[in-house]
Amino acid sequence: MAYAANAQQKFTISGHVRDKASGEELIGASILVKELPGTGASANEYGFYSITLPAGNYTFSSSYVGYAEVLQTIKLDKNQSIDWKLEFGTTLEEVTVSATKEDDNLSRTTMGTEKLDIKEISKVPVLFGEKDVLKTLQLLPGIKSAGEGNSGFYVRGGAADQNLILLDEAPVYNASHLLGFFSTFNSDAIKDATIIKGNSPAQYGGRLASVLDVKMKDGNDQNYNVSGGIGLISSRLSVEGPIQKEKSSFLVSGRRTYADVFAGQ
Image (cartoon, rainbow, N blue to C red; front, side):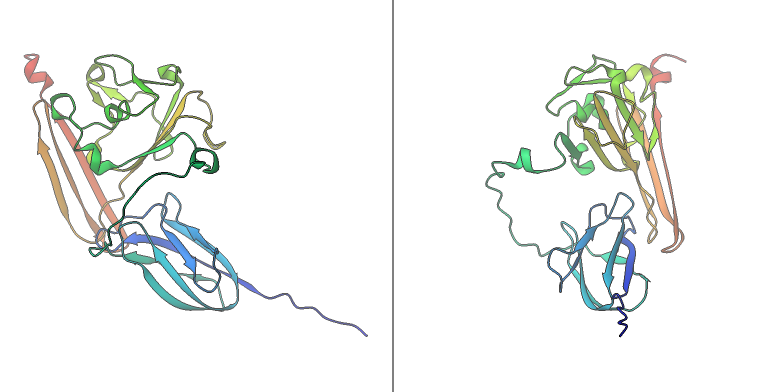
């Protein structure tokens, strides 16, 4: 007698997780399956997630820090593309942080990794009021300035040229303007900045000291926004908005320094 065994068919659900108001991808957003505790995925640096499950009916939960949770029941009988749009939550309960776990530095997989909050950078007092990612980095432990008028930095004894600086995965070899007073990065156009001070993942190669991974904004694909500021030695202006709503967007950001005026040029 012959027996036929049919394996349970599996399907994949994938898509992007975005901010409903601006259309920006939410890096690290969680997609969980309520019926299968411990099963889910996190959105990558492009806001993309992918989960493969056996066919069936599932309740998916999408969440992100500071945003309201979204629940959706989906019948998984084929490969599907589902995009999630999360709204910023305004009724969050109070969270009290007392201490970190004793073995946190041993159990976590991202040792030596610091993620900068772009909103907090604007609150840090800097030279002439010009907010700068590289200058803010030098306030972190293990990172030291390469000297006045120099945007380079030393990480735990490494040389300035031993730091790998990436802008949307493209290496940046000269990260400063005007003898180091300005960095190449326009903070108004930056979405995420992460520095790895040790044990760099295999995907980052070619440097010994650290990795600075900077991600640019994609532009608001929902509404038009204009922002800017006037400083003591420079002014800046950023314009973003949708080209085709929910499908494409643009972001134009620029800075203008007064150095040529001071120099009498």
